[in-house]
Image 1 (cartoon, rainbow, N blue to C red):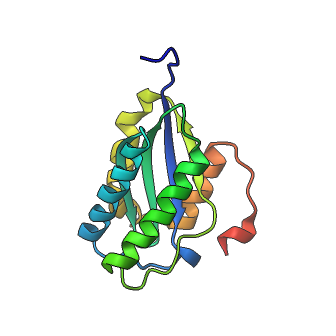
Image 2: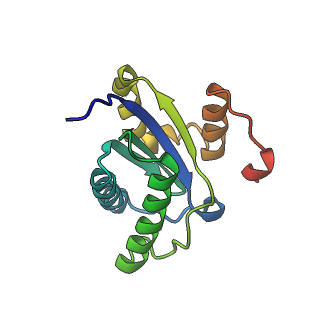
Image 3: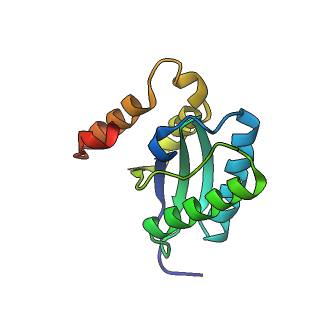
Length: 150
């Protein structure tokens, strides 16, 4: 047992290269989230929910105190890109974008965050992906460069 007690909840968001809509098929995305959940679990973190649409994904995770967020995201992106290519899960997939968004929440936000991420397909009937990311950045007080949305 450790004497370090932390519960950090993150919503991580990243896109396909140039936000290309290549992650077609909800069932295929579920396979990807299951694979990513295994990576997250192997890092002693918690995968609460994965969700996304054709051009980006969201992961709700609990980060273990010994794991650096940037290292986890790097591992997730590298391993999942290899998984997608080797399984031909999304034949048109080339790469993930450089960078990511990560937003922290208190654990009591989970009852709202989980359905939000579960319902990404329905959500994006009303809000475009770039608009959603801008909104998340603004809600979290994060300055951003508009060039990265072109």
